[in-house]
Image 1 (cartoon, rainbow, N blue to C red):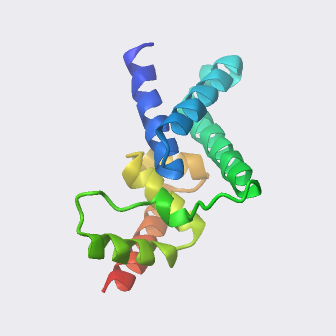
Image 2: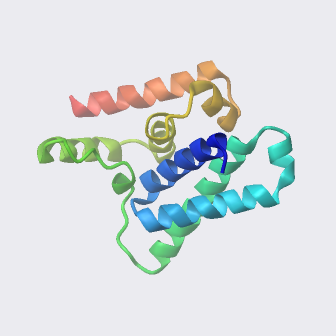
Image 3: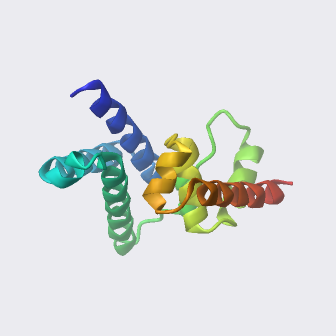
Length: 150
């Protein structure tokens, strides 16, 4: 695996782990996303590997969520965006409650931007919007989160 592929793998793994909260499942989904990319030559040749990987990983995470839900397992969205362990329990609880007020799209946008560290330009391409529109959506979600935390 080249350094570029390793960096991509790490980003996709972090995204999957952030969404699912389980090491083994995140590894499995990351590997599946890469297998599908390697089978689909068009995206690699067009330089759209990152977009393809995130889109595939997102769909696989959604499928995993649906599978868990069908088995009646408790799996809440706030666990996907859990607060860092070093925060005090009261702050973690406050952050989780504030995150619950955001829409799923807003939580995912923040997860992609900050947990997966996707550059704004790449994020805008993935969403099919301008950098300005992507920045505006992120700022709106952060403002909503900030208002809830106050």
